[in-house]
Image 1 (cartoon, helix red, strand yellow):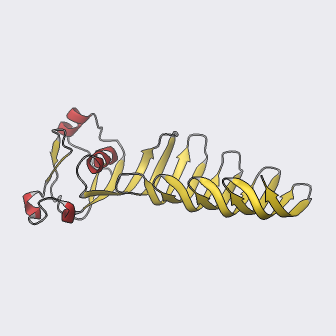
Image 2 (cartoon, one colour):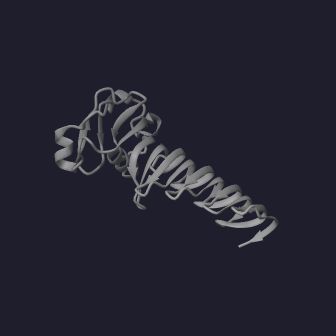
Image 3 (cartoon, one colour):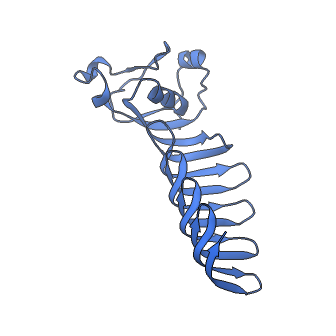
Length: 194
């Protein structure tokens, strides 16, 4: 169950108790006063005058609103590191759940879902699909394989309503050795340059 934020923080920040949740860790070694962690245990501030008392803040895990944690990490609280987010809204109208970087960007393993039913599940680096991943579109077509900077890159398998392709990709396009097969059982094995 979700832990609500305090009414005081909601009043000054506009955050609601049903907002996004993340998991974070405190990194006391990065605090200016790291020599005495008890001196700061229980409090945090985003340098905008807002603060909230969190019992046991010096513990290794913290569950709070994702936007609060991200704002803190980006605005002077490098000791707070976002590790996982759930249902984080992304600029392209998608929702992301999974591992995240210190600044709250998708980083590691995670899933992004779009309103039309399209879903990407796989590896992320700094907010972009990168590494192994699988994209399934709402029409049933998709791609599974390697990604680089959000584009198909390297070995992969692409399926469409009337054809499939297994082979190499470069910059999002079929490029290099591969095998295409169509619904009528015709096929082509060879080099592709799109």
